[in-house]
Length: 233
Ligand SMILES: C[S@@+](CC[C@H](N)C(=O)[O-])C[C@H]1O[C@@H](n2cnc3c(N)ncnc32)[C@H](O)[C@@H]1O
Image (cartoon, rainbow, N blue to C red; front, side, top):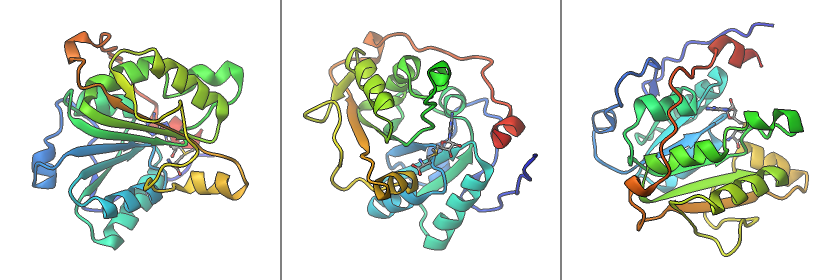
């Protein structure tokens, strides 16, 4: 069944997804504060709390899900905060078209679709290629946070990132089951309510590794999702 795409009129929504040149975040936010990105913001629980805690940071919350963007905008508008913008855009598309390299002070990915079936695992967003690219978009010392309820996804990300040049583990172990001060997203809460643990991973882009020393950036030219299909999947 085809879902109706509801137009989003919020002033905090960046509607244009035909990105040809990196976005001018200084002009968009009217300041030069550090930029942080949440990928797959869902309905905006995490970003609202994080943005309220950190007015000194500009946040971009993205999702490919129209209703999620709509609900996230409603939360931000109701809270009357100025440091969040929402985009309906695919993560790799935004990174490659809308962001400068070394421009992100933090990236948050909470409970991404786990694709639990073995034959679907290659569809996971966070894989070796993605983390390789991401290192180029993080500023030196920039944070990468990943959370999942799915042990196999946590193991996979932990193993891949451990072997990648350019990241530094900020935890004592591969993951922890709680991170002080880190907001709980809607999906995290759902799993916690069922008694399931969340696996939190926290790395930083290593400051001593220059961008030239990172594994080459994988460019996914021609990569574009089918918007209507994505909405109905
Ligand atoms: C399982 S939900 C989790 C939502 C939220 N992060 C939370 O923890 O409550 C995953 C979200 O990621 C979005 N998503 C999946 N792949 C994406 C991609 N490649 N780029 C942007 N968003 C994506 C989905 O539309 C969905 O809203």
